[in-house]
Image (cartoon, rainbow, N blue to C red):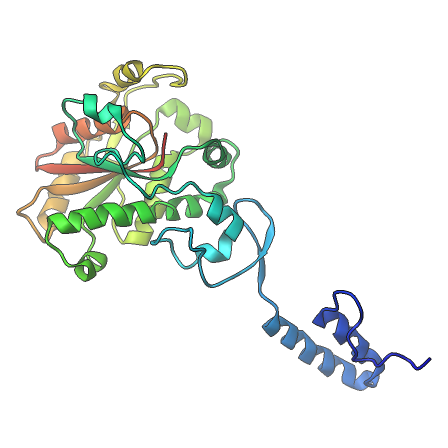
Length: 311
């Protein structure tokens, strides 16, 4: 039986890499290195790039396009760090039922609220058990490399609320995309106890990382008076009472807001602040933070919320 041709495709899966190994029997030793370099280059060009998913750690082939199930607004780098399976499993909030808090289903909380210090809030994802686990990996297990991806997940929600404000300002979509409709980003503070325990404020880091995407300044304007304890198991009224008076403005807040107001292009409208937090539950935290900012500000404020998840 004649020997198998050195470049014939082996039976079975038969990849290009397997075929290239037979070249050692065809070319003399002095030509093998050049041949292998050529085959390696061709294999690199023909095979998709492989990387590990930042969410599930599985190896996947990098693609330049995003899955159709992923909302608009994510950076192009998303498809290079998050696999399609994880991208498609994220419970993105697309449809909004409550115009105030951005909840994807009818909301009794906002209907019962008689007054609020913030105008509206939007969230990126629903706070499902899977998203709770993903956030916990960053907050409690030290997986700090997740932060750039968590921050990027805010972009579709930010794009939505920016579009709403662009309509209020009678801005064209092109102009709205080029010029931010907000003047400053700030975040919900944590207590000194939590800061020592974790070593960081997740909302402040989320705001800082997100601000890079949208070209805005992020500045901590608030302080926390104390710790309110665990919120799990508490009723809505108990949660709201626990956040009342929990936050105060930082000493330099009034001065910073005055400076930002003088630098805004449109001085006819109130200064627009974007208040970032990780989770929106009843809105009590955002409302208490916004109230402290309103009381400290020497200029009129319009405060909007942006959170990673909506419980």
